[in-house]
Each structure stands twice: as C-alpha cells, then as structure tokens.
Length: 488
Image (cartoon, rainbow, N blue to C red; front, top):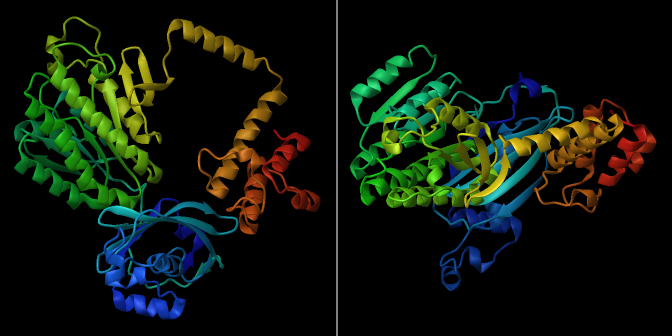
C-alpha cells in the first residue's frame, strides 16, 4: 500500500519526456474547439515572429494531469488547481521535458505543492505550480514507469583543480559532509595521493585527468558532467592558470571552462530543480592592484557571467556564485610578500557555507571576515565587523534586551505570520503582504484559507473558535488576532 505520509517528501522529483505533432493538435482542437491558425497553419505562422506553428498552451500543459493522477500522489489524487507562467513558445516534433518537484507538503490536508518546469532545447518554456490533494491516507501501490529521486539524497560535487591546496581542502571538507566527489586534476600521481588521503571518508570518488587549457580535454570534462546527470548537485571551479599566464590560457581555464561547465550541467540541474556552481574568483576585483590586469579581467568576466545567470535560474534553486577570497597561503601566492593570508581550510569552510546558502550573492572573504553582496560589489551584510561597528551592535542588542517581552514577542510573531502567508500563497518577495485579503488575492481561495488557518493554529499552538474562523479573512485580521490573544 502507498501511504501518503510515508511515500512523499519535500524534494521528491520526477522527469519524463514527450513530443507532439499535428495529429495531436487535431485531436486537441476537436476536444477544445481551438482551431487558431497559429497552431497549425504553416503559411500563416511563417509570417509571425515564431516562423512556424506553436503548440497551444493547454496542449503543452496537459501532462500536468499525468503528474497528479499517476505519480504525485497518483491513484488517490484530486487536482485542486495550478498557476501557469508561459515564458517561451513550444514547437512540434521536438522533445519536451517535464520536470516535476514537490516543493511543500501540507500533511494536515494531504496537499502537495508541485513545481513543474517544461523545457525544450534547454529553455524553460513554461513554469507551473500545482496543488494536488490525496483523497485517502493510503491506497494500493501503482505500477509506475517513473523513478522517484530526492534532491536531498547523497550527490556528487565536482571540484576542478582538486590537487591544489584550496582544492584539497575543499575535497576533504565536502567528503566529511557526506558528498560523493568527482575530482579533476592535470596530474594523475598527485590525484592518486589525494584520493588515498580521502579513503577515511565513506564517499564514492570519480576522477578525471585533463588539461583545461585544451579544448579537446575540456570535452572530457563536459562528458563526465553529462554522465553524472542528476547525481551532480555542485561544482566548485578552482582550476586556473597562474596569475602571470598569458591571456588565452587564463581565458580558457577560467571563463571558457566555466561556460562549458554551466552548459553541461544545466540539464541535470533543471531535472533536480537544484544546483550550485561556485567559482573561485579573487579579492582583486574589489581591491585592484597593478601588474595583474589580465588575471583580474578574466576573473571579472567569469564572475559577471555567473551573476547574470542568477537573474533567471535562482528562481528554481539553481545558483551561480563566486567567492572573492583575499590572498591564500598557497604556492600560487609565494610572490605576495609578508602579508596576512587566509589558509585554504578557511576558504573551504566558506565555500561549504555558500553551498547551503540560498541567496544569489557573491562572497567577499577578507582576513577580517565575510561580506555578502551582488557583484559590483554592492555589499549587503557583514558577518564580522570593525570594532566600532561591533560596539554599536552590542549597544543595539543591549537596548533590544531591555525592551518589554511583549514587544519582542510581537515582532517575532509577525515574522512567523509572514512565513505562513508566503508558504501557503506562494507569494513573490516584493508583494505588499499587509494588503492581502481572502477572495481578492488570486491565490487565496477557500483551499488556501484552510491551509492558512491550519498553519496558524499549528505554529501558535491554538484552536480558533467559530467566530474567529468566520471573521479572520485578511492578513491584518490574522495580525489583529495575534494581538487579541497575546500569543507568545
């Protein structure tokens, strides 16, 4: 038997493919009554910007019913609704990939929220968010032709330049954190020594030996990435020619290799709806010095490239980040003189933090601490502060500690309330949450109202009476309820 609570977890994902032809459109048009020329008339569509017929939207999304009725949750499904965002047209006679992932579960009402990416030629054409309810607690096991995976399962991290001092530190750090490793190096002997040193960890290790300056060797790297598929969740690109190398070598080992990695890993990341690529950049982008112009320019190009990808893919938990570390104590920095330097293990620790971090920012790692911001470099927040700032923060915290308990509780409760609404209504970050009301907010229907009430009662450990249930139909009404009940 399939049991709802045992079978489904957040992060479960499936993927399948299909194609449509003109015969499929004829069947669809006879059912729907849609005979628009854009979908079947070659001469007419050739005069449009698409240059050929495109699939009707509702034919493209028809497999959403398959996802709900056959897999998530399957036999016991009741399709509650969906939100659709059409980004690009879909064409006939080309493979269409459907990647579905459970992004949240309401166990009280047995509701799955599923995000579906509909992809053609590596382009995300349609994004859908579905809500599907299981009508029963359990039901007979189905005969499924689809493999379920979960994005939290043990996955591979690919580390280029793994035999360098920073690469070795990252390898040990991630191996100890339950990652499998795919290690790249130019020298087989040094790679063998690294693999031997990792034998104490319980992880799988793959290896690839190639010179990233050579296009033919980069093909080996690309093929390895494609073979890993959805088992690859993370890439750390540490490899680089020395800072004094010629411009072409720096370009090939940094920017060109980075583009190859991005393009080769994208399909697997889209299937997982999760992925991380972290590029080892340099602090010289924020604090330039002379005599390293080519090195800084190539690192800047690569960092800007990843930052631009975040504008789109971060919506699907696929993040492209750069770390800009201060000078690190390695053979590469032997000409840096007698200055304070980071040690490789510090960089490795911060890279692991970046993998877990869900923001799309760069990390500037100085001797004195970490700064996060958008590449530019627009600083967002500082983890380690100057003495003056630390004193200010301590004074602020002292003042906060002296506030009445009721005031502090009120602030925390509003944060909890905001999270309830964002989770239940799938709200974008910039929405004016205080203006939300039942019925006038598109995603706030009767089902969402039940979810909000259930989450509210669960978070605050209360039960609302019938009067409260009838009158609490806006964000402000829920906020007022927090005040009335003096919730802790």
